[in-house]
Structure formats: C-alpha cells, structure tokens
Image 1 (spheres, one colour):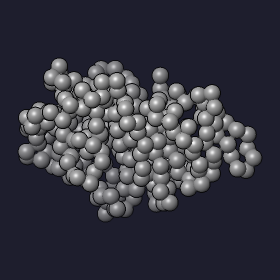
Image 2 (cartoon, one colour):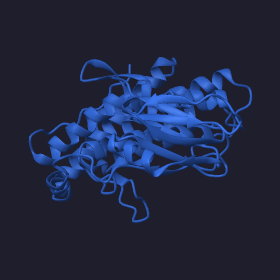
Image 3 (cartoon, one colour):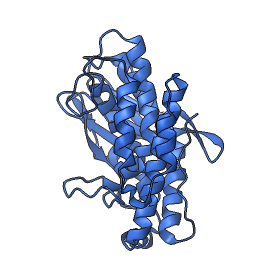
Image 4 (cartoon, helix red, strand yellow):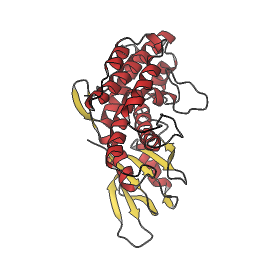
Length: 297
C-alpha cells in the first residue's frame, strides 16, 4: 500500500484517538482524521503546530518519518523510531562489521547507478549523455577516479539552462528547490534504513562526524535524479523560483509517491527505497552482492 505524505502549513493541534491522527484547527474548522497506519511521512512546517506525545508514540510505532521545519519553513529535523526491526541488534552488527573492500564495492555500485540515472534524465530531455554512460560503466572500486564528480560537472552544466547556475547549498535558484526535495528524499531513505534494521548514521562512504545520516546520504544518491526531475518540471512551469510557494511544495512533496522502476517492476519511490535498503542488508549479511537501485527511463 502506498503510504501518504501529510503536510501541515497552518496552525493546528495534532492528537490521536482510536488509532487515528486527529487534526484540530484554532479557527474553528471541523476536525479531520487520518488512519495512522496509512501515513508514511509528516511534514510540520508552521511554528504554531502542537503535537501530543501520544501521537508521536503511535507514529514512531508505525515507522512514520516526522519532518520538522525551522522558522524559514525549511526541513531541519527528523524523528525516526529507535527500534525499526525485530532483529535490529544483529543487523547493526553486520553493518558495523562490513569490510573495507565490501564498502568500496557498494560505493562503486552506488555511484554507477547514480550516474546512469543522471544520464537517463538528460536523455529524456534530449540532452546527449554518452559521456555519463561511459563514466557509469567504468566506475572503479571506491570510485578512485572520482567519476561521480566528473559526471556531476557535466550533468549540472546541462540540466538547467540558467545563467550562473551551479549546484551548491546556498546558490541561486533552483538550489533552494533541490535542497527542499533532497531533504524529503533523505527522510524517505532514513525511514527505510531504520525499517530494515540498520543505523542511518554509519555510512559506507560518507563519514563526516557531524553528519547524523551518513548512510542515508550514501543510499539516496541514485534516487537524486528523481528529485531533479520534479525540480526541472517546476523550473519549466513556474515564473518565480525564489519563493517556495504552496504549489511548489506540493509538487516536491509528491516525491515519495513517484513511480520508479526497480528490479524490472514499477513501484512508488517510498516502496522502492525499502527494497533498496533490504538488499543493502543482504549485502552486509553476505547473502547477496548487489544493491537493488531504481533504473531511470
């Protein structure tokens, strides 16, 4: 079943009754309810939202990702369950014991999948991507030649026809849209990792000691082009990219429900993420050597 993403941009009081999320409004609007088991992610944007601890407990029990936003209305916090799998302790041990050669191989697969998906998006837009196809096929163990960086330089030069655009956190639009979309994607991947019994903190390649989601940042790489697809559509249809309007956020919040192809089958991105993280654990456990990533196009 496709899990729902709920966005709260106005003041509200969120509580629970009879396994339902109950939404009460201070302006007197009628209460609304949503079955908690149907929710995959909640985004809390308004600073005047109140959430009961009873609701938070039920959301975490259902492995719902709760994303909080700062005063600038940008995602900056993520609540995940501490116990996401019945065999979590054993699974984390496999993750922590992963050898360096295994991690290098997994990163090789990840970079290759990311570049191939970047190529797929460019080709869909009629942009030549032979260079990216070549780079994707020749990624070495651990990506020693930094094919990821070489691909990124070509990719960002060609994806958006915007004067002065470079991909960086604080750059000109549509960097703001990309940042928002990647934050949603990161939450989806972190949720899937916890559900598969792994720590999103301990990465296979990302290892910044200040980063609490290193593994999520690793595994989300091949999924990034799906965010880029949504952002490119917004760029083509919206006149003002400086402000994250309600319509723009609505489109970005559709990312978890995007259809992707994984293992030859079409699947919502949020479901595909769980298949990816499950296959990652199989690699850590030694029962498989291949991560299942989506294939663009």
